[in-house]
Amino acid sequence: MFSAVQLARSASVRWVSSSSAVAAKLKMPKAPKAPKDEAATNAAAAAAAPETPDTQATTATNRAEASAATAAKNAAAPVTPATSTPAASTSAAAAASALGNVAAPPLKLLPPSSKIDPVALPEALRILRAFALAPQTIDCHVVVNMTDKTKKAGKLRDPIRGVAVLPHAYRPAKRVLVFAKEEKAAAAKQAGATYAGFKDLMEELTAGKLQYDVVLATPDVLKEIKSLGSVLRQNMPTVKKGTVSDDIASLVKAYSGGLAFKSDTGGAINIGVARTTHNDEEVRANLVAFLQELKSHGSVAKGPFFKQIGLSASRGPYLPLTPEDVKSLLA
Image 1 (cartoon, one colour):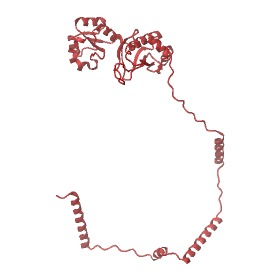
Image 2 (cartoon, helix red, strand yellow; image 1 turned 60 degrees about the vertical axis):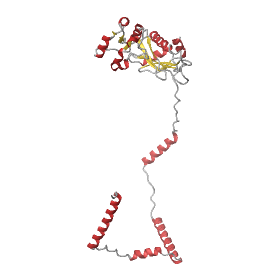
Image 3 (tube, helix red, strand yellow; image 1 turned 135 degrees about the vertical axis):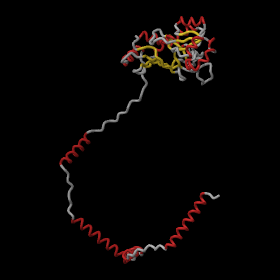
Image 4 (tube, rainbow, N blue to C red; image 1 turned 45 degrees about the vertical axis):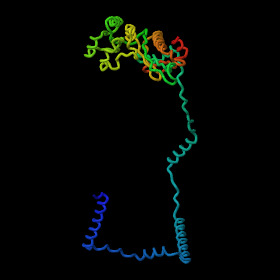
């Protein structure tokens, strides 16, 4: 077997040999030579020949004569002075005087960015209402300490979850679905649950006949409702989320009219607590209820639990609260 390179070489050799043979058979005439130019030949020979003292003197004389002739011609030619229009000269003079009289403006540097100064709670609410063109939600922004005394150094705690019952609700009550048996189902219904039951409720839920916002359950039915995971998805009741409890009546009251919150891994919690239509006392009461519930989760933190507390609205700025207001809210 021949390689591709060997085949290419043999093909090129055959092509060269065949082309040579064809040229020999046809006896193609050779191209005629160009006639020799005697003047060019003599000039090239003279340029290539070494210069003698006589030839050097002759060349210098010729160069001197050519330079003298060029100087005489330039001296005889009339000199034309440069002309300019009056308008052009006037505008140029005006521009020059303007540039000479007007100094360049000083360079202004932007001041360094600084943090927003803390604002008292009444003033913060007044500012947020001024920015609100329509009733808007007032959001509370909290950053808490996520360290945990019970864990190894450097290991943070799990996200904080909880439910705060606000004294002045700012949104409609949630639709609560409760999985419980007999007496506990009746207690959940009396506490304000939209749906409460067990087997019959599972069938209706699978058929897609129920509309709900929160799903709660008692510990004794968790194993049986695991089959509803594909239907409930993120609404599946779990102990970790705080949606499973033996005291189902209290849990229903908390979730139906309460405020569920959850922190991120950095300890930040952003959640609405009131509306701009609430007065200062109502907003303060809701803030106290939320912060007191959040404060109950800070017993395991190393150092101060609250790092930052502030307010904002949809179309308003973020306003941190003064230390005095924070202290009074947490008292």
